[in-house]
Length: 84
Image 1 (cartoon, helix red, strand yellow):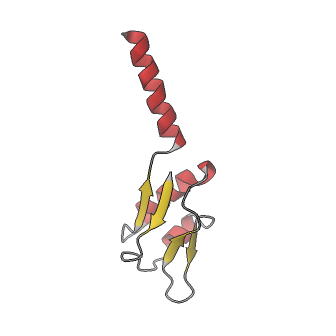
Image 2 (cartoon, one colour; image 1 turned 90 degrees about the vertical axis):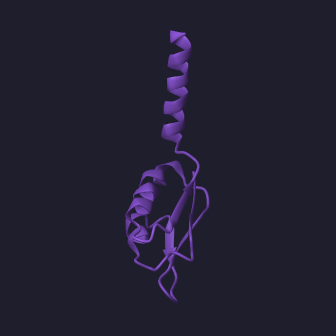
């Protein structure tokens, strides 16, 4: 999963940094947020998703799927193959 903050939308509400402090940093100039890294470590995925849901401006953009949802999809495919 990848994450970035849209600088045109972010208004510096700081919720993302409170929810996922290891993933988001705030500007000293205007308080706007940016992601500390593009690729989200698996142990931070849930927090990043919560931060995105909590952003009042919907400025956090998540690309890709989580490891859990990929595994669930693979599991469903295997189950379907077994049934056919």
